[in-house]
Length: 239
Length: 239
DNA sequence: GGTTGTGAAACACTTCACAGCC
DNA sequence: GGCTGTGAAGTGTTTCACAACC
Image 1 (cartoon, chains in turn brown, blue, orange, green):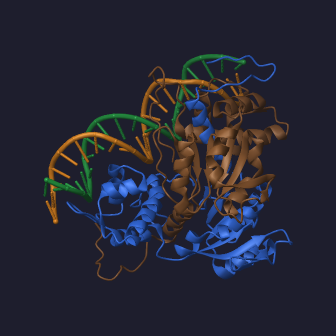
Image 2: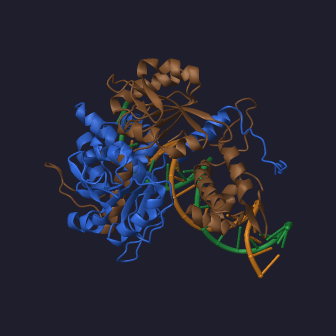
Image 3: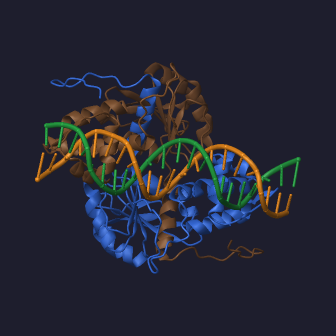
């Protein structure tokens, strides 16, 4: 959902940048997770075939993806797990810490706050915010929930660069506007709305209901295609 | 994350099917949500430009997407909101009900169980299951949590066709195997693992940590590219 | 022998631009 | 005049298949 980047230009020189394809970027975290698994099991070296299988892709795609980062493998041997973990982490920006604020502390916000893989890999939750005063003050996963009035202060004091929006739909856009005005340039949106943001701000959307609808489409196709009555007054015409 | 469908073949005839592009399918739910919003506001007719803007895409893409469903617009006028809602719903399989089971009732499972947009649009949650006996028996969103021992029984008795897996990573694959063995052919996976499923089963993955890592990549690039020390013993060589 | 890295081909998706229709 | 529907062009992604290398 982030604005598609075609031939990204360097903001300073205006020249085309090295540029890793967006599709590749989206898979690097998957490779990274598989590599961590291998590392934990004491595996030192892995072939593209093995790693691809652990990541659920085919080996040609894996090799092409990794080739965008550099030549980090050894022909006839494979990839050194630890070295590759480091290179992918670095490329993804996980060798530095990113400060996150979670806005909206309902069930979902709580689930996110308590999510382990979060803090572990370079993401630090610096604030939990909610507009509901009966939630403000609660202690969750070692943090105290603060009121959304404090949003600008918290973003600036902690240097938040990623905002996670887990509010009801109606609250999302106004909060997003404030977050962006306060300097945040990356937003992860769980609210079921399309957020409007200025150029230069990245938004990614996670939407349960959309995922279910996509599954329903395929499920229906397995079962033999669309069925259903037309609403009153309409005549069915297949093009 | 569902297996990419290139030139889908009809399971019976083996001939190529009408086939709506996967990228289009993924956007139909977004259009549908925008259309519901327009309908609620009493809008009867909408142009591709207006609808595209509400959905966060450009109008050429919207028109191309809709053209895959049929010719449902009127030149010089636009699209009739209600009729389009119906056609998209039908195409997505939302004119029939889908029975869902949620497996894993931690914070995330609770958030999913309580998600309104769920029940409203053709998805009925028929079961909440957990392996933790201290959770089993709790009442959540009008349902009683049952033990995962009951998984096969619940799937068969209620005719579950979509399983939502919201368990810890280690539990996901075994539960997925059981779910598939019981006849489920669509899985929505929130656990941070790659699920292996047989041909014919669709899996979609939602992964918070991956989304954050993709945002971190773009955030880092805005800030001027990767930084970081190499681990001991490595020499940096740019291809 | 085994495995990577990569041009080239195949495929998928997006955007353009305008004919066709209301 | 305005807006849809769509071929054609442009762009991005995946897969193939093999040369290069260990």
